[in-house]
Image 1 (tube, helix red, strand yellow):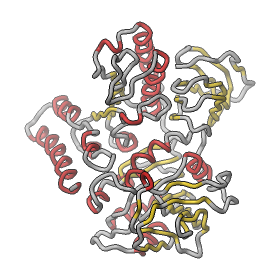
Image 2: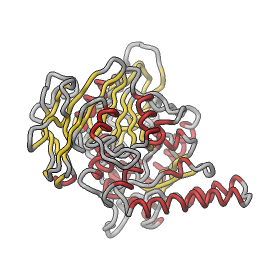
Image 3: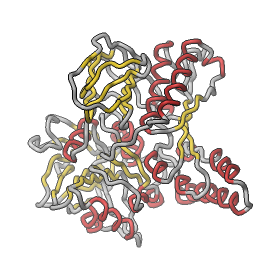
Image 4: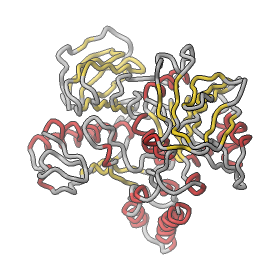
Length: 475
């Protein structure tokens, strides 16, 4: 089903771009065609919870857009976007436009399709989350008043929109850059060899994983798996491969070239490399990719993972942690597990007790294998530290950052700390004032779920900290 539908959509989009060029359309006209059509969220409704974003690879057209994920729009939730491969879009010199289709508190009655803000403060918080992501990802942003123009007809809302516009005008002058710490790769070709629909493995690995990682306090760049072979792809410390169940020989070699150096960490889930290019199933294909011997059995079980071996940095502080291993605890078949005496076992599958989380260290790289399809923000933070990535936050709030801006959308009220990767003068962009000079941390109390805080980081040499103790500004 996916093979027919997904490939048809992709072929249609690419054909339109090619036709535009063949007919001799102007560059602007061709870009307009490409800009309107790749509403990347549409295939999401039919496939596995992810779009078909290969327009990033199209030779014509510079613009892509999609709205946020409506089921994740509530206050305290990550928002995210139907198409979130911002790493791929930047790599291929495409501009992504965030379509901020939010429902303000002025929607009456509340929308039954999308989350509706409770009040003005929550409206401003949701708007701030959209703008903070745009700053951190260096995206474009437009406000989409699908519920009616009157839903933005409020002085404070429009004052905030004006503030966004002014801030964005300044941001393009010093927009910052993404940290090359962690990258996540997703394969669409895998779906051509799988049962259609958001399954027990694919939903937690693809859709839900993005939401969990957005709370880890570690900015992540998302790519199409094919980009692993791109010579311009930056080197990262942590590579996360969500679903490379099917791989061509060429992609296998490209992955090995990229991750097996610089003491990088590669993370794999469930059945990486199990389907070879000729369509055959092979446990050896998993081992040759991951460096860890993996076995499988035909058994239908509700998969879970119990963390063990708390002496290892990947599992430190996670005592008693049980992680659901499939979507809504649906049964999984087949079951994969590590069976390698050279690997260190860090977690056990439930039921059965087989090795469900294992790590193996090589001279030039490290490999981490999950037999299940999920992990928590805390576990990802441990993986990030193990790889040498910078961790900004540990409170599971929605977070994003680049070298110039940090954004935290509050998921739980209470004290917050953002640990900076250097020393900076820090400006609250909405109060438009410095909250401190020479800071290495930002501390504040978050009074309410759904508030958003955005700070500009202005490079500074180390000096005595000057902190605004009355910093209570919020968005």
